[in-house]
Length: 131
Image 1 (tube, rainbow, N blue to C red):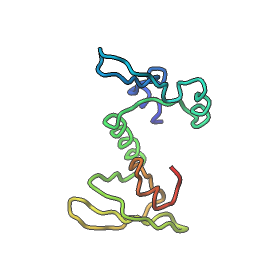
Image 2: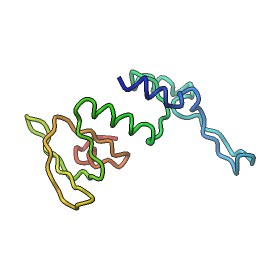
Image 3: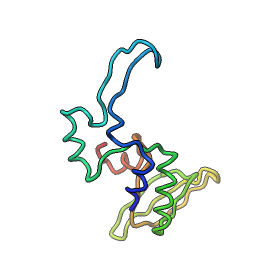
Image 4: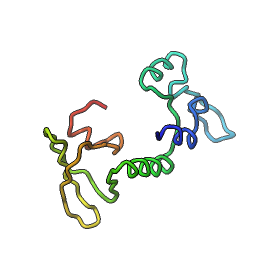
């Protein structure tokens, strides 16, 4: 299970409470916003959205953890690659990927596709999923 190791590396949710807006660390504070579900009016939204608590784990710590876990379970993790398109059928997914070093496209058959490509996800866009 990845969660215990992720939580051991992360900043826990109770330490992620506020965004402060100020001129400098010692300067004038303009305001504070309670974030990440720490405001009492939003806490339930966050608690109901996931079976686990939120934490802050930067990509440089999370990515190696996920790569190790996925590789240990037989996944083929690719870097220097770009998602081009996917076709889903009764056997799984056929994904077209562009190798950004060789500038060549190739196809991969998979059971699943994980679109971990951020807020402007091409995977989410192609599938027409709300984000």
